Amino acid sequence: MKPSSGMRKTPSWIFVGTQPSSGSTLLARLLTSVPGFTGIEDRCEGQWLTPQLYNGETRWNPRVPENFDEVRPIWLEACRTRARNARMVVEKSPPNLCRMHRLMEAFSDFPQSLVLLTRHPLALCASWSQRYSPEVVQSNWCPYGRVDLPDASTYFRLLGKICGERFAMQADLHEASDIWITYEDLASDPETVLGSVLDASKVRERREPIGAVIGDIADRNHGLIETLSTSARASIVEGLAPYAGALERFGYRIE
Image 1: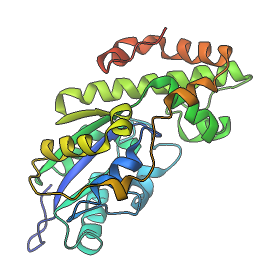
Image 2 (image 1 turned 90 degrees about the vertical axis):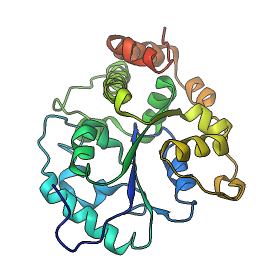
Image 3 (image 1 turned 45 degrees about the vertical axis):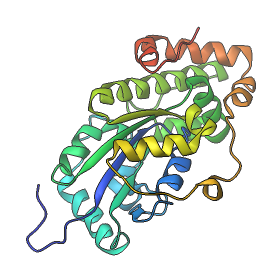
């Protein structure tokens, strides 16, 4: 797929392969603080411009054949309007994990880079349990269809399974990525991480200090994990167990 004749070339793209609650909102805020950087949507999540990508029944299903012949023109039109003067577009929709290879292929005629962003799996599952009800997880996050959740243990085991599956998706993207960063590093030293991402994206320019952009941030992993009961943690670990290899590829060991 190529740009139509006479269409102005869009900016380069930074695709972020991330799970929800991994710190991608902070990363996008840092990136879009750089002059000439923007998203095609307020949250830097193009999924919200195309219903076929945010539909609850299909958004996390890698087997659903999305039609990028329809998606691409919508995203490029947003580039013409919202990102008219931009040099770089940041795209961080978490469900892109299911289709990142196909998404990048759909935009392969434009300069692009892929950033992988990970976070400790227990912290992710703890965050999800606070933000998303079992009903939401069932309707929006289960590509294999609704599952029965008769008790809390089943719910936490499902969260672990979903988290593990998404780590496997990230592991599948590892070789295609330009850089891998972690929430932990982003929270502890955002300025260095931002510089590394820009370097990996081949952006060379003088930048102002980013203190005013990031505000007061801290690594919240420990506090989140502490909210998990012993039984909840054990259920999450049980759900994660089949994906131990993917977790270890990113330096996370769950026992």
